[in-house]
Each structure stands twice: as C-alpha cells, then as structure tokens.
Amino acid sequence: MKHTDIKELFDKPEKFVDKDVVVCGWIRTLRESKTVSFIELNDGTTIKNLQLVIENVDNIDLKDLLTGTSLKVEGQFVASEKNGYELRLKTLEVLGKCAKDYPLQKKFHSLEFLRELPHLRARTRYFEAVFSVRDQLAQAIHKYFHSHGYKYLHAPIITASDCEGAGEMFRVTTQPWNAKYDTEEEYYANDFFAQKAGLSVSCQLEGEMAAMGLGRIYTFGPTFRAEHSNTTRHLAEFWHVEPEVCFADINDIIEIAEDFIRSIIKDVLENCKEELAFFDQWVEKGLIDKLKSVSSTDFAKVAYTDAIKILQESKKDFKYPVEWGADLQTEHERYLTDEYFKKPVFVVHYPKEIKSFYMKQNDDGKTVAATDLLVPGIGEIIGCSEREADYDKLVDAMTKRNMPLEQYAEYLDTRKYGSVPHSGFGLGFDRMLMYVTGVSNIRDTLLFPRAVGKI
Ligand code: 4AD
Ligand code: MG
Image (cartoon, rainbow, N blue to C red; front, side, top):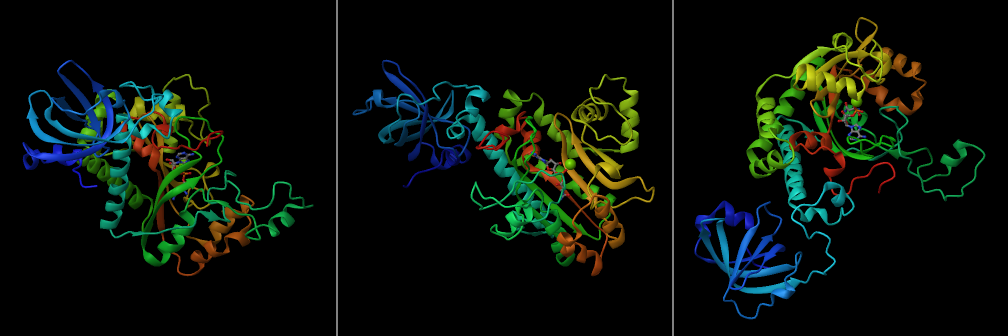
C-alpha cells in the first residue's frame, strides 16, 4: 500500500509541505463540530499523532469513525499555527471498522488497566514510547559490541547445565503428565533428551567456551528463571545481555561495563528525544538530566566490606540484618544507590559463600572477584565477575557445592586446555530499560510479560 509514514512527514516536512500525501493509521480521537472535525491519527512510526482536518468533504460518515478504526487517507499536508503541521483531508477509506466495545476510549488509561489488555496496549502512546526505546536500546547494544570487536553468539536455550545453581530452572520435558517411574533417573532416561533438561538461566558457560576461541563474544537473548519473586523487577522470562572477554581481569571488565552502560545511554539520549521527553514529563521528572549526568560522570565503586560498614553506620532500621557474609537485600541496595552514592555503584568482592561457583577466588580466601552494578531506583542491573581460571580451584568450588562434575566436563576442559584470565557480566535488559525510561514495573517493559502465575 503506497503511503508515507507519519514520522517521515514530521521529520522532513519541507519535502511534503503543501503537497498531497497518503497516510495510513488508527484513529486515536475524533472531535466533531458543526463545520469542521478533527481526527488524531497514529501509525506507530512516531509517538506523535497527525491531525486530520475534515472540512467540506463529501461522503464521509463520521458515525463510522470510532476510536480505533483504521484508515487510509489522502490530503494536503500543511503548516498550522497550533500543531506545527496537519493534513487537510480530501479522501478517506476505512480499512477496518472498530467495534464499539474497543476498550481504549480514553486519552489516558492506568498502567494497571492496560496490564489486563497486553494485546492492545501497543496502541497507546505510553507503550509506543516504551517499545521505541526498547528497540533503540537493543540496537545500541549490538552496535556497541559489534564496533568493539565482539562476536554475537547464539547459545542454546534448552540446556542440561544450571549456570547459577540456584535451583530456578524450568524443566523441559515431553513425558506425559501421568508418567510413572520408580526413580528420577528412569524418568529422565525415557525423556526427550534422555537426561534432565531445562531452560537456560544464563548463557555464560557456553559464552566462556566460545570466548576461549573467539576472544570476545556476547549473547543477547531470553533467559528463564522459575523464581517465585512477585516483585516489580523480576520476570520468569527476561532478556539477558552477556559479554565474555578473554585476557581481562575484574578491573578490566568493570571498565568495560561502565563504558558500555554509558555508551548505550548516550545512544538512547541521541536517538529517542521525543520518547524521553514524554517519559520525563509523565513518568519520571528529571529523567533526561539523570541520563545526561550518568552518561558523563564516573560510577562509584565500593568494596562489599566497606558497603557493609556504610550500611551499619547508616543507623537505618533495615528489615534484614546487615552483617558481613549476608547478601545485600533490595533495601540495602536502595540505600547505597538512592541515599548514599546517589549514582550507579559497583559493589566489588563479595563473600564467596553467597556467590556462584565460577567466580575467581581472591587471595584473602574469603571473597571472590565479583561485582554487582546497582543503580538508583532499581538496584542490581548487572551481575559481573572475573572467572576462576584455575582448574583445581574451580573443581574445589564445585565439589564444595555438591555439583555433578561429570555434567560440567566440557566446561572444565576450558581450564585444562590453555586457560586464560577472563571475565564477563550479565545485564538484565528489561531492568536497563526501566532505568532509561523511568518505568517502575518490569511488567510494563514488554508486551507479554511472564511472571509467576502469569502467562
Ligand atoms: O546476577 P545474575 O544472576 O548473573 C548471571 O546470571 C551471570 N551468569 C551473568 C554473567 O556473568 N554472564 O543475572 C544477571 C542480571 C541481573 O543483574 C539482573 O539485572 C538480571 O540479570 N536478572 C533478572 N531480570 C529480570 N528478572 C529476573 N528474574 C532476573 N534475574 C536476573
Ligand atoms: Mg546477581
């Protein structure tokens, strides 16, 4: 269907002004008066609507033009004092009528209301803006890695090994619901893969194996966690960005992570001006200033041990106790980011007991070379570490966690055949999108969020 995008009209008005153009889209609103009527038309190419002016046009029955109706129209694109530009309608064709029970009748709907209508919410300005920034952020990530010599790797989604070992894997099975076996082993032996399989929680282990030949790689895809965390920052299916870098220690990877985050924020600032202005006005006041400041100032860095001291000295009445050895809870992370540092902060060198088996053990015997990047308003967006490159130390850490070594034989081979210092991180893409848009519930960062009890 030959037509012009509304975005193109607004981006290059000089090319179209005073000429006839054909535009397609959906009616957002219709305002009628005796002599002249107005339609706000949106085609999804920009969050801006094009105003159609209907005056002295025959054969148009306004009664048919309900909100949500799809149209193909032709008219003269003209400058207007109030709107910048508008379209003086000449012909109108209804592509699809809209039933009267179309739920999106108001200009503003609450996010709670829209969450119940995931299949329709892409037709609102809010979600158009969310998905535009989501797209730009994803493109920015690919651009960053591609231009820095990383190879984009596709890792399997179905896997037999649990990277995080937190028992949060979804099972993948084709056994009938009433399959009965005496033992778990028998059950899995008869299953599709002839062994226990699940959905990947992280592509890190495959990423490490690839990096060990390719030098620098990244994966970017969905990963899955059967966490029963019914929070505003947990999904059962989230998008995960995971670079893995050879010949890099913990300090190198922190530098990379910071440069990466700042660079993708700059990209969004440059390419999503209208959307960010919308979020700044309606969702998080001061958002643009926040992003500008984050993209141009250094992040803070604090050792876990010092972070514990800061929390203890805060005299805050935390729900969860603060003591060396305990994991940081959301309330602790939020104090560090929102009240103490007031900017993104890397918390470095966590106690080894609360972190994963693959992290490099520090010489102090107590901590690992791992860091989480915490940001104001959200908490952890990146989990990062230098990997344990020493075969014996790695086997020791796995044995202490009762991990089945035979299932990780291929992974362990990387430490046998030319092991090198290497590091990597995982960025929660949906959380990053929350940070750059100000959207406060992760379920509003994608169209069909999957969370406990919700599919
Ligand atoms: O800290 P995590 O668990 O780290 C890993 O999985 C490492 N193997 C990554 C790596 O080094 N390659 O997860 C990384 C990030 C978190 O910081 C968080 O932003 C996000 O993934 N994340 C979630 N996002 C949404 N919903 C969930 N349930 C998430 N779990 C983790
Ligand atoms: Mg983590």
